[in-house]
Image (tube, rainbow, N blue to C red):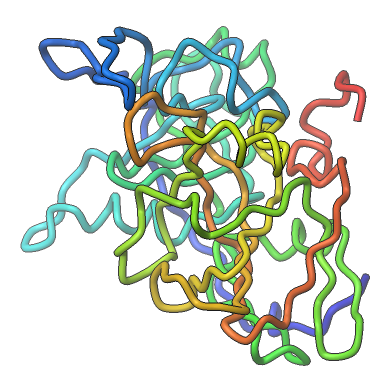
Length: 299
């Protein structure tokens, strides 16, 4: 639907990163929440067989980021993290990304999420592009969307989403509320890593999947990368907090984890501390569907 916004006042700006190498600690074991020692792929690199639209749960992996992970490794005098901060804050889900070096130069992809802690931005490219990319190739993003406002819904805060993607989502109006299509409705009580951040314009926070009854009740074993989900009693306006009646809408951006307090990560796109968002179940509510990134999937 058409929502009145301030999109005509937003600035579109370039940010850049390079394909980031996978990283591992040494010794390479992760200690699971159940005391197991596990060695498996984690953050960074190029994932040739994990993209948005795929399961976020059933991989022998930990915090795997779909598609390609990028990071700005340059520094700025007096603010060494500044370039990567700009990449992570200004990039928005749905922004166009273009490879500007290497064999895949000129290929177009789309931002699919942001991962806090490691401070990566994830970009989806078709399989034939993934085969040409190498670690260190540069990817430039047309960052656009931060500062977006819904003029008729002042109690809903928008962040981290390209305006054109927002308009493709299953959104309608019911009274003073936005009605938003989501694949899952999640209780705030299962949210873990990422709580305590004082801002939500970068990064994510995790859905923990260690309680079998809760996972079954909320159908969380079917979470997919790229799913748009609702977190109830969660306010992400000025950081991530528990607040009764608040609603946060986000995108699942990385896979599950074995580690206590961790799980599939969610980057916030909409939040209302006063509950002016009403989620409704829509099995197609996934950014891969809205951006037509995976037409081969049976949506």
